[in-house]
Length: 427
Image (cartoon, rainbow, N blue to C red):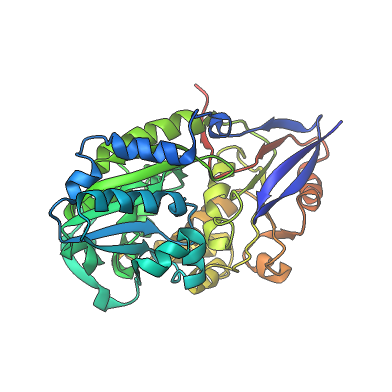
């Protein structure tokens, strides 16, 4: 019997066909079966009405002159069309005349275009609100707030330091080196300079045994991030959980740490799956927007790594509609063999960290042990080969290649959305 499994890809799916005799497991997060019993807007309204560890947003906004609301950029699926109007209405209930700036947290990504802003926020917000896009490469946007626990200098967007109330919105999911996304991550890397982001993501930090999916305790990257968010006095956050359809299924609002911790506990409970080892592991980056470039793809490949044993083959489906995702990443991932890339990066001191080097570092770690087959219809095969990966145009073609490498009786584990799953060693 042949089983058909739909893998998220760009704005649709690709079908994978696996003989049931080979299929060891299909690993999915419980988030996709979770029923909140409420609609998306109601969940967000409830979170705003019942904040964790703070007064309601309308009370915090009362009497404030300048308010900055940090939101995510075009690479994240934050449902800002739902969340931003509700947050803005809450602020204006307490302070109708507030001077509000929406600050788009780009990290080191390219600027979010006006067209993307309209898709993300809706026309009403783009036409009527003040929106600023963070630019990590413009030193004039940043002020130095001191030193982070790692020793990195903390350069943050000046708007965050000049406001009377700083609010962040985002969503929480497992993150391949920060433990989890959301909360403090809106500040660092979100609205920091390239120097601060680079040092936070240094070879040394990424190589820490604590810098991995699902781990916050002793994680040096998280420790810098939470310290930075405290320094700029984030007074209120709104974070959500999303299912595979990018629909809100839970929301938390309130204190920077307390609200995020409750969200993390929920995500941990509903994303966690016992890791199941396969000879071949098939995954995706969850479709658009996270699969729009190769730079984002190590997120899911790192999940597959946890299930690929010592030498399993990993198949990654990633559209790469926006190409490689960064010039530094593109150069480093094509620098040489995985061993040569890792050796080169290991010699770079934290303060000289190259932008985007952390993704080649993670890929080099994985590629030293595993063959990776990349299913992409937008990256040309020669580029894929220069990245030390094997090109394929469909999941079935990739699976045929993997069977040639591992044998026709190879066990196949499928993780349709590798970003949403937290694979843990069974007890």
